[in-house]
Image (cartoon, rainbow, N blue to C red; front, side, top):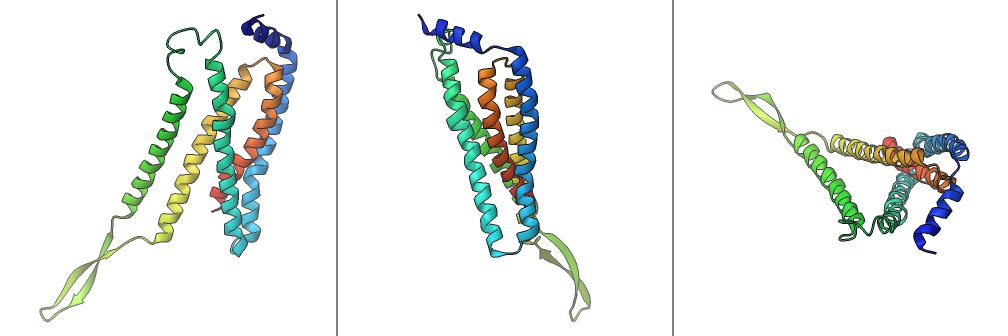
Length: 219
């Protein structure tokens, strides 16, 4: 029996519209609660522990762990499935899918695009805030009182806050696109064998993605 026939039989065995609809309703509640828990945790941590030595280290650990979860989602979970889907016997036998590894290309372009957006936005913020704001102060000389322009840069704290706000916005945009793509995939699927593990994985990922976003908001 060919692999295509085996995969088709397995898919038909897992296809159940009623069970899939029930799992989708459960997934809405589970993902919503896990997102609230993830975002709220760093905010409550900031309310009770901000200003203490442990707070900054805890927020850094949370953000780094959340970044690791996001990277593992794309490189460990999604990327192998993309290679497997494009290697399917119904797809890999056609042009141009059999001629080039498009999954790796899209991953590379996505990483470079994210880096480009981050560098461009950071450069724009630094350039906008590095423009000195001048004010005239009276200077008494022998000829009389004249005005002298004094250059004054914005404080570094304001620049740091703007960078943190930028990071929060970029992270939020990434989470929104990720949620839309995964939600559309789950919404179109009628395969309960695919939806069931996907709900558990999404709940785990949403907690730590929310913690990363909540850590940026708390700062």
